[in-house]
Image: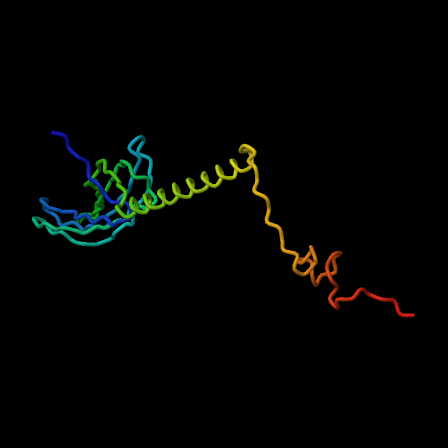
Length: 187
């Protein structure tokens, strides 16, 4: 039977409970909980998580549980990483200890919302590209398509007697001036 690695959703907090059982003859004080996400290839640090300083005492023969919460960077690529979680503590004689209580491969997976938005924007991009390709094909066929006989352009009616109606009220030849008369010289 294959052991499946833990999965964490991208962009969400991860809650961890660290349990202690003091079987020694001295009490100890938990001074630090910390964690890091590392590359599974060469164990280089990818992300260090916030350190928690509980300063909780566990007396000899007692048990305790401490809550630790961390947030993997939402920009991490969804894939496998090595998660290392450790606890630092000191005993009554001020001797320091560190224990790694979790050191395994975990998988960061995409959240459902990022998959949905990626699908939506992918489809929008596809529609835009298809529209651009259709417009380009239409333009190409108009420019380089076979010569077709063009229908004769409709002729303007000559009700006013002027063939340049659109130049009326302009100072361009063929149109009337703004006063309707040509300029005259005064002596």
